[in-house]
Amino acid sequence: MIYFAVFLAVFIIIVFLEIAKHHHFFYLRKHENKYKSFELCNFINNEQSFSDKKIINCFLVTGEIVVCTNFFQYIFDYCICIIFGKIFSIEESYDYARREAVLKMEKNAKILSADTIINVKYSVVNLSPSAIISPPQIAVLAYGTALTFEK
Amino acid sequence: MIISNIDTVPNMKMICHYGLVSGNSVRTRTKMEELMASSKKITGGEINSYTDLLELARQEAVDRMEDQAKNKGANAIINVRFNTSMISVGTIEVYVYGTAIKVTSMDLARA
Image (tube, rainbow over all chains, first blue to last red; front, side):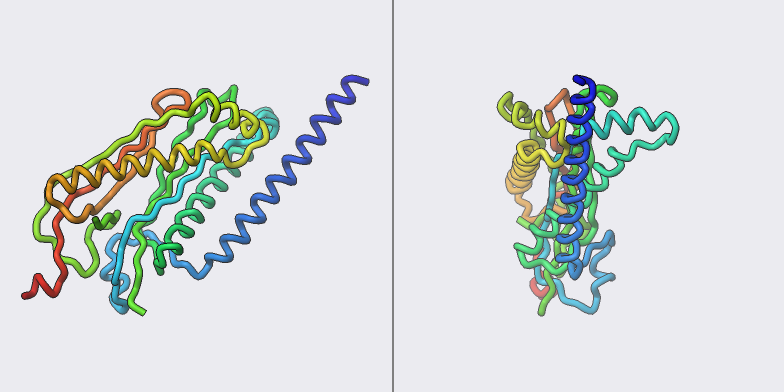
């Protein structure tokens, strides 16, 4: 009976966390669509790329986030990675962290009335003490140069 | 102070450069923050206290770099790069570096 109760509790937690994760991704997609008009690129020489527009202002914008992987999903994925060779939860966490960092950077740029962000770069670090025992805590710092064009 | 991570400052002409400027900041999480973040370690998702920590570290590093550039007499920093690294468990270092330059507007440069 106790084993069944523990199994049920773990199952409910996993289902709840899965719903929460989908909720996070749903809001991420919603906000990404909101900033769809915002141009993002990785050009180096802006003067050649935007020759038809006059740049009136340029400044550095950043967006940072620290994301932790779901513990239960991480342990489960770590077990099944023996067969598939792929840890899905970490993959999702990295994807989520990078996208959210870019989104925060876009928000900061929008507040300062920028039109585009060029030369976008990432700096990623894992803050977790050990890769096996605890799930990774991914710190992502996204940065770029925001430009404002003459209207 | 104009800061950008591209090679030039748009619509500006570089007069002289002052070499490399840098700034760093090392921050660690407090026991309180660690306690608050422990629940997130199980459920997953964004750890707000650590995000704030990273933001503070980044801001401090940029401020230090700016001060260094100002002391040299520069008014812009180009080619800025960030480097984030973990020193020990829960301790993060943000290192930022770039080239300090002096720029003037194109019109003034032509005159």
